[in-house]
Image (cartoon, rainbow, N blue to C red; front, side, top):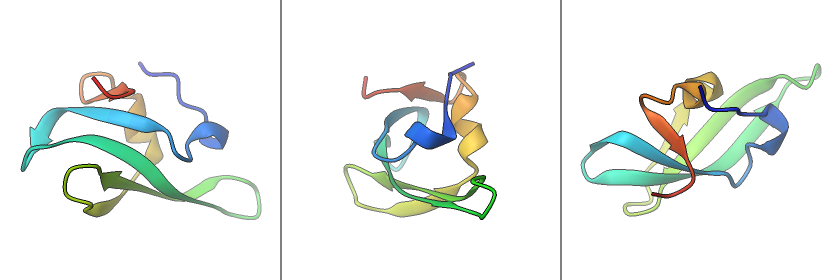
Length: 71
């Protein structure tokens, strides 16, 4: 399980271990918090294509799908 802190999400880099459309490397480009400082929105941008997708930030903890950093 990847150790992910909601406070350090912004600009963090991730490698998807099961790439789709050759999109393997991603960077967190937007994080929104609610009034209780819980993550409401987390957006990843594919480095190769620039495609942006919203994800549940907790899915980044799954080390069978995501690896922290670019590999």
